[in-house]
Image 1 (tube, helix red, strand yellow):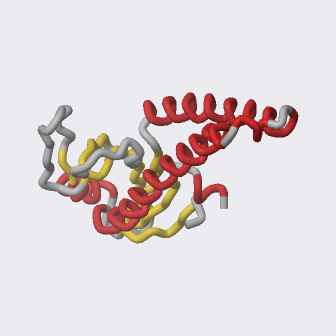
Image 2 (cartoon, rainbow, N blue to C red):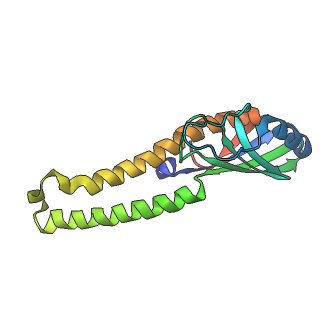
Image 3 (cartoon, rainbow, N blue to C red):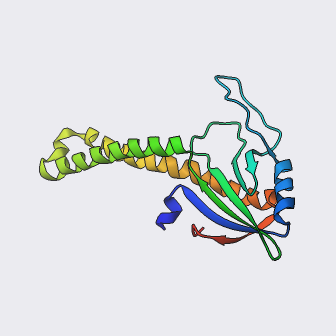
Length: 175
């Protein structure tokens, strides 16, 4: 249950293509990331995924036309096996987002503990409804991360079968 709420996925796919052929196919299916676009200037891509390939690994993300700080970074490693190749995939948050959200949620969690103490030992209900703001911020922050990440990761889990010409054979994050 708790794994379904964490912003990461670990998956394994199997392709009938050998590693070298799969890397060539993948290179044709993705586009290199373009530089930052600011303001109303939108960057558009002709392919659904952007990223880079470095034999035998790759790093991708969906090419989206909207902003989502919680868009999964997809890292994979391709290994030859008897009947094609095995692809181990990990999806997670960008490092800066992880750092920011850990700090922000940590501070809000501490504020929630202080508020809980006030509610339990100092009759905090006299403070009015504003006493519940840290709890709302904590819940909202967690919900924002989970929903922002999981909605995008579900799309990518499905897309990867086509992108990698592979079938998912194992799912360590119990979907």
